[in-house]
Length: 171
Image (tube, rainbow, N blue to C red):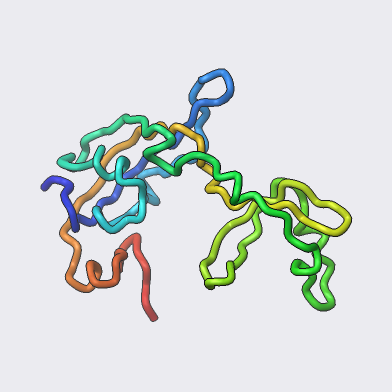
């Protein structure tokens, strides 16, 4: 069986990106015991990632690089904003632990979209947050192996995610 749209794909991989010297630096390892599982075509992963897996079979290995513009894009200066410190105050709680440079804070925009912001700077009145994807500007280097492939069920396709082994369990 080969990977095609609506296949449920189990892969192990390591993700690296070039550091300042251009040497690959491993940032994430997913091993075969706890593979990444997704529905091909519905994963929300960069299209270039899925395109590189098309047609592979079980036990095939892969090794490819996705250029930043095909992955998570370039840094958007408009996504770096100053927010009033007061919005981080939670009644009766000290939030200074949370407001450390480099921390990621889950937030919601005025449309109710969830996003991760990274604290860039903490001033007396404001906090500078960067809402760019942490992998923006990075070339992503994937190497790994296809562990298992199966057809997605109609329900999985309707929901857009995997159920059962390796997936979302609805209760």
